[in-house]
Length: 124
Image (cartoon, rainbow, N blue to C red):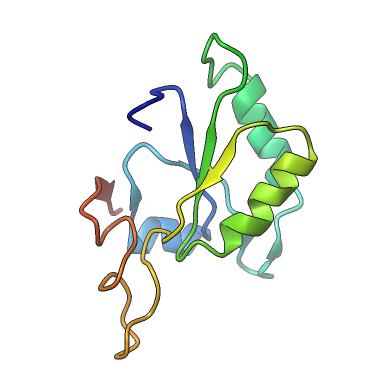
């Protein structure tokens, strides 16, 4: 994101995760799966398109990179594949996610992830 200030960071975690666990500063929240049904958000693609085409983002140079983040980097693979299948050219994911994998004590944020690496985040 430092290399391209026009890149868009989208937090695809649930609303509860985004609000209560915290989120990267500047991330835009569009849930991939959300409560109460915990099914794939049928509006996900539409919401991302609206964000990218609706004037909220303008790189002035063609494709704007989309960076997806979830808890541990797994949900972003499916969400990213959907975007690529629907014409998005530059889609990336945060490999370790926001919280990273579970450690031996079943805790997160101790082995990897956005927070572990000291990247800017906030909590509501």
